[in-house]
Length: 404
Image 1 (tube, rainbow, N blue to C red):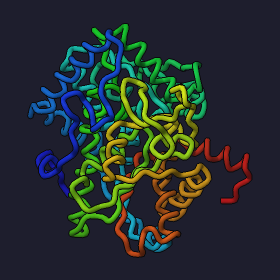
Image 2 (cartoon, rainbow, N blue to C red):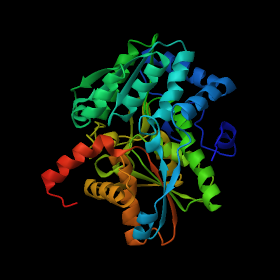
Image 3 (spheres, helix red, strand yellow):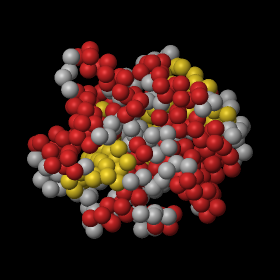
């Protein structure tokens, strides 16, 4: 099947933020004065080039010829028989670099070049965004530095080496919980002192405006492709569209293609980082959204078996979609995720990223409880492949004595 730029850009109606970058009461721009001009410059450039046909052609061409798009949608025959629903996977694991992150990074790197920037900086949790940023920097001749928490760098050592192999510098962050939140903190601090030459390639639908909107737009290719592909296969829309949520970029991109459909949209957070399930309204990293915080507004530490979901907040568009009841957000426990990781591997020969396994964990539970009725049509975005996680899973299995 051929999906060109025209076929995926028309007839979709994702939500847009207002003139202040807010989705309802969420979002906005809460940054120090030293970053206001940088954010405004980025907003102007994005609005200009995202409406420029030459820019969009270069973006789509790179994702097609270099990034591997369109990614297929795969029917899970064996797992469908086991669960009782009819399950398809949107295969972002098959992109170059192995996850959905490349969609956003190619767009931002091209934008940085148009803006005359020579350096990229980025944060990363599981390392997939860092690898994608390092890849785009190598391709487009940009210098790159990636900030990564020490805890994440240890459990994702393979991705640390990949980033270095691609020519990027990796700055290990030893402050706080030494995870994604702290990597974002350091990357934003670095951006303040380098705004003239450097673009901050933020990896999710979070942060100050225009990042949540811009990243969603670059990632919307996931949902737009999936909608076209699914209709071609089934002549209908799915009953459920499911994706994991940390900051929320793969979910926001997926949901963007289905907002005007009858599909039920389900975002699955990590139970130890479920800002939408257990959080309260606050401000972090330049945005107003739902956060894990104490009564004094101090950010609580998040925990997840997956480094990519180890974040105490969530993108403002997701908070808005929950508030208007267009999407439902649930949480998956680490033990459920581990079982789902093994289940997909054994039944379909597809090893998922631990992040993606959160989505499958909820589907398994919902099918078992009857929440998802037999025969329901379900699409799950497989946001990345699990090569990066197999050593960690092996260690957990050996430590806990799991039989698999």
